Length: 52
Image 1 (tube, rainbow, N blue to C red):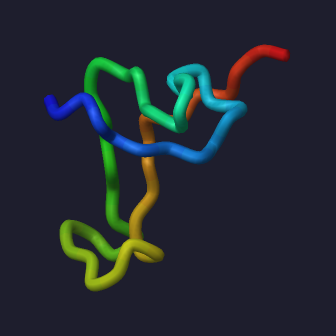
Image 2 (image 1 turned 90 degrees about the vertical axis):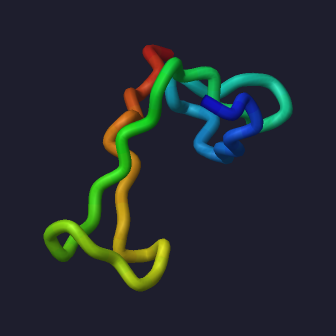
């Protein structure tokens, strides 16, 4: 997997320095079944809140 996946959600368990995602894999889903036309129609299911 490319290692330059950007993420600005700094309370995610997989957020790394420089806004880089450090997850081993990323799972993205569409709000409309199996297709999407815009990024706003998707969600990152990899997100895991970081324990503060």
